[in-house]
Length: 77
Image (cartoon, rainbow, N blue to C red):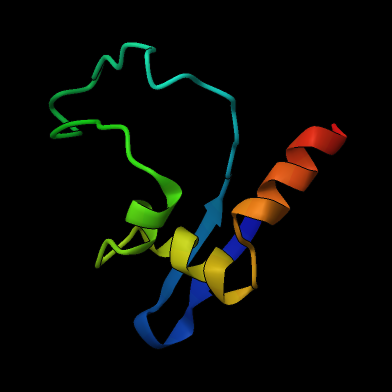
């Protein structure tokens, strides 16, 4: 859980970041089409190139959290 804030925009969010292992062969089902346009598989490198990511991800990256650190945390538990 991370406490995310942008005081200059009066923004505060408590972010819950989860990691799971999946296979790209697993089917993705959008159970909330009224909230989410679509889901797609992509590599971590492709994800990093997306503009305008959900701000908690940008906050994590600013804290020097990267895929290797996430893997280490995941493998440790």
